Image (cartoon, rainbow, N blue to C red):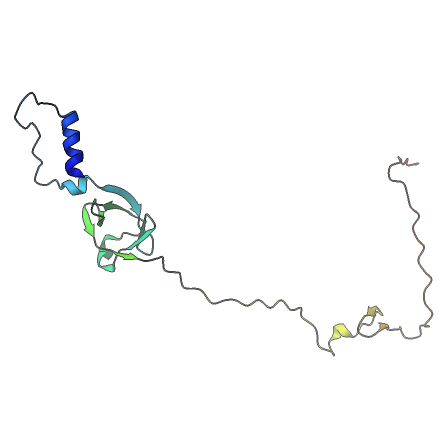
Length: 170
């Protein structure tokens, strides 16, 4: 396909040069063309010394501990052949690619007791000297010298109209 495509492309768009000499500049020897023509992105190093790049986790080993990289920026480069390179201030860093982020260690589960506290059977709260109703005993405890007659019923309140104005006399 390249043979037919390039031949057709050159036939249609080729232009005869004005000069026969090559006017391209010579590339300096310290330039690495592959590093210039690659995808470059800056990423921050996490506290666990991992760099996340395009859903990949790059773990930087402890041999670079003298650089103190946690929280600092590194440059991640991806070359045309798919190779990755990480560097910090021009120094190349070694790394290993992790398949997925390692889950942090889970701390001990704290169990919360949600059961209400119940006093013991002989607790002072169970002996009610006032005579209030206790649902566990079956009714109020009569006071010494009191009769067992029930008190008169309370009067029922009369309904009032809340939408009518009320006047205070004074």
